[in-house]
Amino acid sequence: MKFNEDSRVKIPSILHLMRLGYEYLSLKDPSVTWDESTSIFTNIFYESIKRINPALTDMEAKQHFDDVSLSLENEDLGRAFYEKLTAKSGRRLIDFENFNNNTFNVVTELTYKKDDDEFRPDIILLINGMPLVFIEVKKPNNQDGILAEHKRIQTRFQNKKFRNFVNITQLPKSIHRGLTWAESLNLE
Image (cartoon, rainbow, N blue to C red; front, side, top):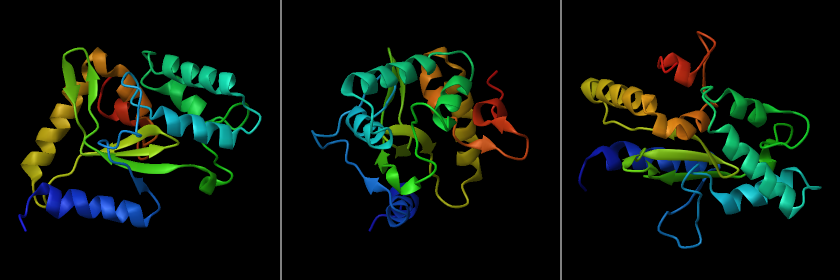
C-alpha cells in the first residue's frame, strides 16, 4: 500500500466519520446532484427540509432554498445564513431538538467553482445537504503543509467569487475569541 495523504489521513478520517453516522456519497454516482453556485445537494436538502418542517409544500421548500441561496450572497461573512441555520422558529434548516432527524453525509473533493476560479477541499461534511464544514487533511508532522494550506484558505476566501462558499461554512465558531471562522481568518 502506498503511504500518502489519502491513505494515512483522508481515508481513515472518512471511515471515522462514517462510524459517527455520516453516510459517504460518491460524486461519481449520477443520482448525486448539487447546485454548483452554493454546493448544496438539492435532493438531500429538499427531502430533509420537508422532513424537519412537515407542513412545507414543494413550492415552499423551493422558496426556502432560494432564501438560503440569497443569504449566501451577502457581504456579512455568513451572519444572515448562520441566523437562518440556528433559527428555532419558522422554517428550520436543522432539527436541533431531534438531531437524528437530520441527514449527515460526507463527500470528498467537491469542486467549489466560480467562473475560472476553483478549489477542492479534501473532505466536506453535509448536514441536510448543506456543506457546512470542509476539512483539509495533511500528513502527520507536516507543519509547513498546514501553514501553507492556511495561507491558501485566507487568499481563497478573500476572493469575492468564493463569498457564498465562505458564508455557508460558518457553523464552526472560534470559541476562544467569540468570532466566526471567517472573522478569525481576518476576512472582514
